[in-house]
Length: 394
Image (cartoon, rainbow, N blue to C red; front, side, top):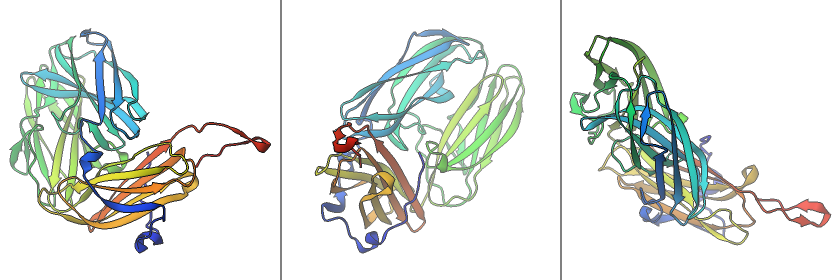
């Protein structure tokens, strides 16, 4: 989905909103964004025992448990090899995209994973996450252990594996792991050191470092990448490191991808940089489609993603567009966004039937801006009018 920053219109600077609407105002974010209680997501595999090289069928359902519609949903799956109380991600992919869910609606989802023929024998954990555009609704795919549906299978295969030790990572001299709370770093470069562990015969691997702002759910969050070749002897452990470019205040994701003849391994590490940076955490609308004369509520949540202590003076904007870019509603407020997730909402009355709308929100602080852009689309009922004209949607 494209992400566009909408140029502020004159009516925003004047604080003018349509007469049939109410301006943006604070509301408890939990009224709309109740993490892990927005959708019900379930997954399972067709069997519990596989062999390396098999096709694994993953099925499931997702249900919208809220009173508002969800658009641009997707289900991301991560596969982990379990080993003595820890795990190593060996793959990541989507099994559903472009999901739209009305309140209480349930849809079936599913996909196929071809188990690599060199997979190591053992227990594998299949973990699923539901996101709407960039918003995490069930689980968090860039942090370990934050509430996602899990199923496990046994795979019969080989005896070798190559992975980054997820519990022995150093960030600017501080030892940490992917399951631990990450301390904030001062703005500037951040150095990350890791240990690459080879179990079995000698191997050469390609190590790719990808850096993102916030996470890797949107292509426009990508910042930079680099790669290196690493050779390891039999059962060798070798240190590798990556230094980021200079980073401003905010939250970042370092994604390290290991590719070798043995297996793929992915490690994701959160890199918080202290300061002030406003971030959108959720965006939505109370109903869709919307019929002429009906009231609709737009809502959003935002927070300071760079600090648990500081407020961020910000402009908060929300805009609703119909077809052909027709502006239906727009408002901007100036607020201090706190480290906690703050909520805001506004209301408008539709001046015609709306079977298409585009919902855009932006939070802008002194250091930059963050924008979310959602599209809602439905098929309008067709009705013949005099002259054979079809009903035209908004």
